[in-house]
Image (cartoon, rainbow, N blue to C red; front, side, top):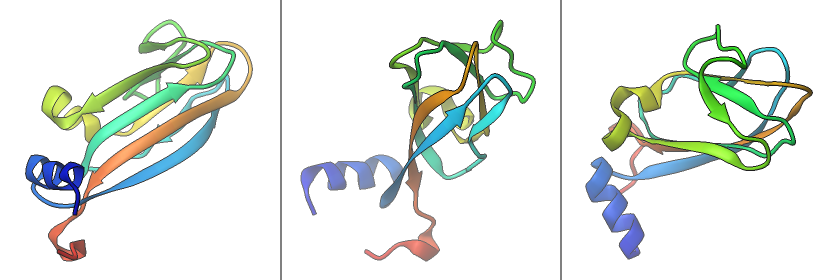
Length: 116
């Protein structure tokens, strides 16, 4: 086990796993991350040529929510800084046209799944 792994285990109380996916977000509301109460970090990056918005509400529009700049705009949420918010479901929408958003989740493993 390396130093980063030991630090992560101390920080989050045990091992974690990473889930990394690309989501196509268009001009209608799209789920970019489902609710996950064991998520300890969430990174959302807009890789598309279109700006967008990100929110915990399915009612997100391009006029509200957190602004997602085109071509690499993004947000990082951590349990230390953002509390339970990191585990909520997140929704996105683009201003014009579909594009790819890159999502990285860090999930704290429940005790039943730990192999220490």
